[in-house]
Length: 88
Image (cartoon, rainbow, N blue to C red):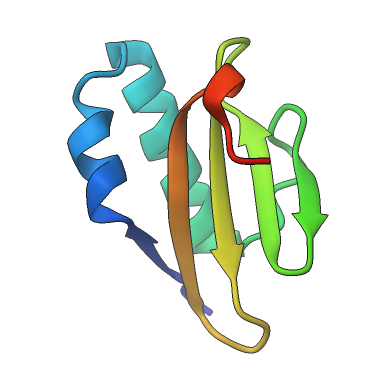
C-alpha cells in the first residue's frame, strides 16, 4: 500500500527558508509517510494530536504536523517549522 503525501502550498514556500538539514529530515519523513502511513512511531516525539492529526520533531527546534482522514490514503502536511509556532 502506498500513501500520497501532500504539502500545503504555504508550507512548500516556507520549506526553502528552513536550514538544509531540516529540509533533509523533512524529506526523510515524507518518504516514511509514503511508505508506512501517518503513524510514525520511530520519529522523535511522535504523537497523535487527537482525531486524525499527528506531529513529530524533526530535530530539537523544528516539527512537522500532518493529518489523515480515516480510510483515505492521502496524508496532508499542514505545518513544518519551529516548535514555538506549531499549531498544537
